[in-house]
Image (cartoon, rainbow, N blue to C red):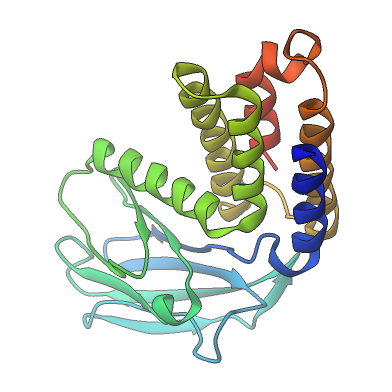
Length: 241
């Protein structure tokens, strides 16, 4: 009975709710002492008429702007800007994040090889470039982004519900959900950073299929269920979707 309920909910949510969340990428690379290459990649489909727009510090001015290029489900624009006195202790922001219920991955690479990463979200849509990077803060922000992405989608919640019904409580459940979150955060970062394109139709089919497989496993005895014996490995693999 619980398997059929989970399957019906999964199929009803398949088209309407799967993966609405898509982060943008703002990449800034220092070329000379006051010259920077800016790459801005953002989804074509947005949740609002208000566009996501990068806002560079007041000491920066555009020198060259390329036309938009479509890349998979997103669009990309490159700019060459000149920023007198550089970017240290300057604020970089992106407008339109709250209206689009989205996030932006910010990646800054300076001449000295020092890099800064940040996740801009509706609660914090700006970033002040520090003199020294804070790796602990970066890891924390990526973890929060992965968790927000999971809890924002009903397909993710259905999968977590299925894991709860299958695994039960205790440490097994904690490790299983952690593996799912870690796998999903890896894919989210790789897609945003342009490591590979995001085939939406295929991924949405695989997500629905993974929930279907989980529903089938719920009909079996625990001793016969591979998911029950090794929940974290399969949860991490499904999390990559």
